Image 1 (cartoon, rainbow, N blue to C red):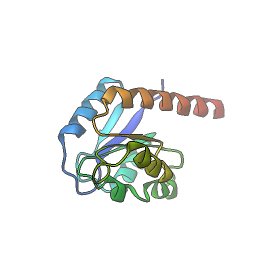
Image 2 (cartoon, rainbow, N blue to C red):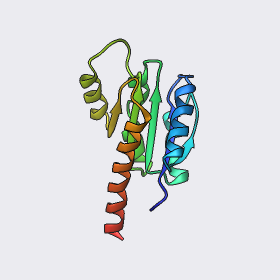
Image 3 (spheres, rainbow, N blue to C red):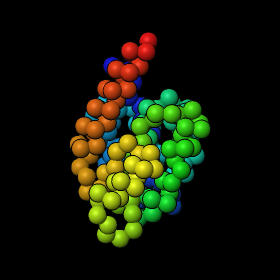
Image 4 (cartoon, one colour):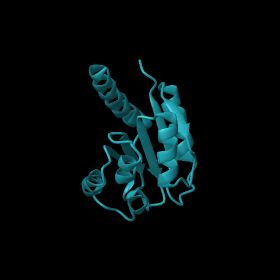
Amino acid sequence: MAKRTMVLGVIGADVHAVGNQILNYAFTQAGFDVINLGVMVSQEEFIEAAVETDAKAIVVSSLYGHGELDCRGLREKCDEAGLKGILLYVGGNIVVGKQPFEEVEKRFKAMGFDKVFGPGTPPEVTIEALKKDFEQIEARESAQA
């Protein structure tokens, strides 16, 4: 099995560290190589870390409600940095106020995110999605080799 490297962090001015540490632990225990950038991470820091480590996924979390603003343009910046096709996951309390999750998910997918997870999503749900997506990437890469 190829190295399953991901970059994890809390985007923007968000300082919520507990969820980040829980995800870091859960993803590491599940066998992923986690590059944890911690809190208050800029889009550029996510991208630089992904380029440096040849990561296949960027997992963005946000709890303070401004994830929608903080995440805008991330897919385009990834593409420009040579990270076309990198998995982009986002989760947490990513919008201000109570909004129907289906609408929130639609907006983030339109921004180029592969998976969107609402508040309170158990890490196991994200881990299963990551495993499936990594398997698809690995199958594609071995078919190209």
